[in-house]
Length: 336
Image 1 (spheres, rainbow, N blue to C red):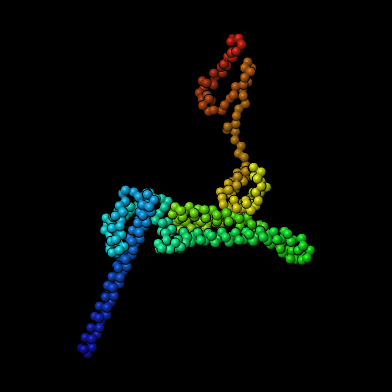
Image 2: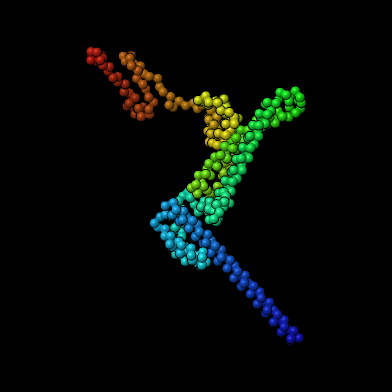
């Protein structure tokens, strides 16, 4: 029995040591993960600073306060040797990042990371970046919308040319084709609006790729612009008479839809004009001009103004009679 009790005590001690050992291992793993995460974040921060510094050096905008040899030394310690940086090194990195971010704006570390290729040997890797995928999606959307527009035009031309014969041969088929024709006719301005919005975003993307200012955080803004352009292209046709402009230049509904999708401000300015025209006119009499005062002995009228400074405010001024300025006759130079 004593032997059994000793074995039980020994087993319990082993269990406790195992539990405490697991806790120490868990604590050690947690500390190691936190340290690894800190090292990874510092590595990413160092890479962003190096991206900005290299871009500034290539474009001739590198500040004298940035020492490239210090950055390469930190790169060798942190990336190559995978050692920790000192607090002074981290403070210097922050200083460099602030200088480069202010100097290279609107180019940022995010935009440089989104426009750089992964490998130096392959030129196709540019299309696998965030900027490349954005441009490739715009290509797909643009050509798809263009294909829909071409199909609509072909259908409209075919229906207009063959509608007389189709109406005589099969009335039900003609009615169905007429409904489709009416639907796609109303759909055409929206398609041209979407096409104009795609052209506008592509034009912006060209400048952003050239200057390396593409920011993937603005992707929702570009998609919202596409939706607004599509809606603007159709709505502006409903609000604007497409008979002609001020210069008597005829504008078709398709061209007006394209303009509305390309320039959304045109729709908003048109809406502002309509709202202002519907507002009731405000009746104000504060600035109404007074009729001219004509004196008996003076044929020239004297204009009266409603200036508050010209109105006498003292009681003595109310009793003073107005003094008339004598009129001089130019022929005889005599006073009348």
